[in-house]
Length: 306
Image 1: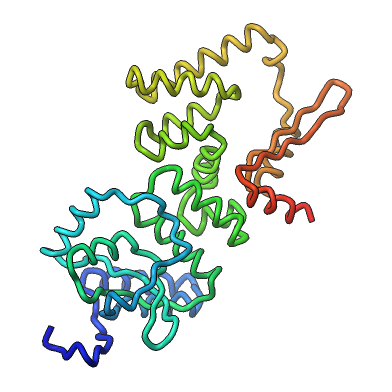
Image 2 (image 1 turned 90 degrees about the vertical axis):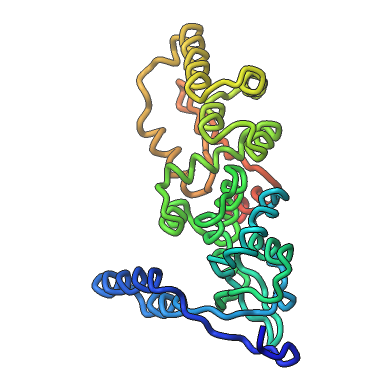
């Protein structure tokens, strides 16, 4: 760098014409729809970034990513050496000389491996909750998180940022059913969650397995997936066969669905951010089951109950 390292100053850079054009086009549409001035200011901030000394950036304590593939980091590091950082990091300024990472830890780690002394970064403002929400949403949308990391990020947005599932879907650009499918993965046994995390099975396998109520059966089919390299379609067929066997053993299970009960379950599930089950007997007595995945999740539910 030509600049004297003893007096490092942040250098503003403008993004390329391609991104600027897209943002300009979006501004026209968004203005017509009456989007808030805050979003308009965010659009303006998105057109420029600063070059920040890498040793001034602290790791984000709210980072949702848990595992980093070393080989993938090495590949990204080599790419950065040749191409530079294509997508700037996002940070917030703590004081005159210190910044805290909001999103882009993978890029930061790879940049350090590449020997960079400074990195491009957008500077955002916000308190810890706002920072957590921004970090989670940006990582969900831009990073290749595994299904369990996505599910945990969704759960944190609900529990720590006080978002309802409908709001969460709007924030991350996903349908509520998609968000719920990810959240349901957290009800799978730890062994299967680890398999999803490590890429031994995919989201489709997990969605099929979650429809089995018996944990032993879930684990049994999971073992078959690994041993026989079963496709998602094959697992779905196995689950369907199990359901048909249950129907034959219990004809009562084929009775007409109680739509009022289903609606109540759906309403409560949206309220508590987890799949609530309501069981009702012939005498109209029953029970409500609200599952939780951790002590923090239990405390979240208790707070909702007041």
